[in-house]
Length: 65
Image (cartoon, rainbow, N blue to C red; front, side, top):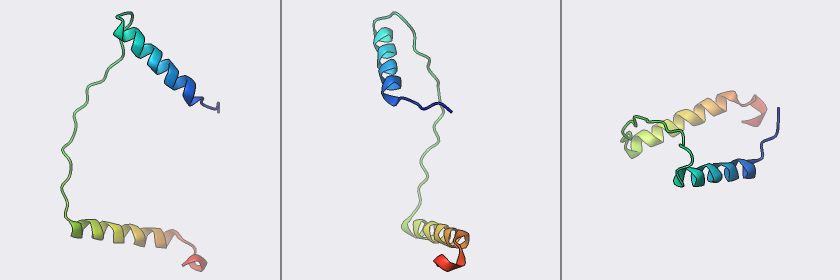
């Protein structure tokens, strides 16, 4: 597996953006349908957290509890 060089990737992205703004190239675009945000109350948040804690505790070895 090759190591990624994020600085080079970011620079390449800005170079492509600059060329697109100058009209020299066209950037690839994707249209997405976004789902509306889920509305939950505080009690539901607490219940979800408690469920996650229980799942995490089940995954721990007995000596770490």
